Amino acid sequence: MISFLESFFGRFAHDLGIDLGTANTLVYTKEKGIVINEPSVVAVNIRTDQILAVGQEAYRMVGRTPAHIVANKPLVDGVISDFEVSEKMLKYFFRKVNKETFLFSPRPRVVIGIPLDVTEVERKAVEDAVHSAGGREVYLIEQPMAAAIGARLPVQDSRGWLVVDIGGGTTDIAVISLGGIVTSRSLKIAGNELNDDIIKFSRDYFNVLLGERTGEHIKIKIGTAEHPTEPLYMKVRGRDLLTGLPKEIIIDSLQIRDALSKSVRTIVDSIRSTIESTPPELVADIAENGILLTGGGALLKGLDRLIAEATGIPVIIAEDPLTCVVRGTAILLDDIDLLKRVASMEPQQRYPL
Image (cartoon, rainbow, N blue to C red; front, side):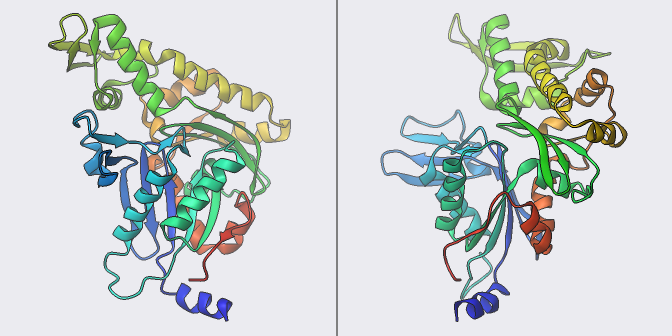
């Protein structure tokens, strides 16, 4: 009876593909494509424990809230750090997806991307949050695998592919062959760490404290991984640490390159180490196929050229790298055989509808 009901009502469910990222959450539905692309931020009134805003609206509050309102990021380094807030954020996104359903909205099947090297406890936290938010059946997919599928790589082939997914909280490096991950590394150095590098440089060099959003804005506008042929300049404002008053500084792309160099070098060295521990036959494939860069970090100017120079292997930036993971989950929603093959574990089902 349950299987019949599941089959019948499942036809009406808005099955979801989710990239639950440290910086941004993206949600895909079969009917409308990517319907949500918002920051993973929740604004909470700590006096009343009330959720005031989620996503873009909450992100606008970062660094601007009074003491009793906290703009909370419930994911740290790609995993859930605040279960209750993560659950409420997912419920908000689920409701937003289903807002046009007036009578009955069956629980969706959910395919969700997770970082490499998460623990069983962290996996369970993701599953529980999705179930509590309204998910019926939850499949967990490692983000590099989902990104490779989203980039339309033939992951079930016997050939080897090297995928580097640079997100907000983690950089995941994986060699993929025959529908599985052969060799991998996961770093806690990614987009957020690069933002912090810029903030630290401004504090140490200019004695000016910048906000988190300003650091990210600088990275996007003039950030570079290589020596710029023609420096770019940018005016930014922060708080003078000596006087406590506002101060405007001019920062250039060469300074930002220096600020980011340590973190960028760590990422490049980890890619080299992953290649060095890969079976020779697959290394030969990678040398021919190239290295695929995905995630927001792939857009850092010159990073592809720096990696190519350090490894001697061509580097390709995926088309629309920010959405590769969620597009991979979308493909898996339509290909159940591939989904069952590449899922990191058996799906967890808690509710019949």
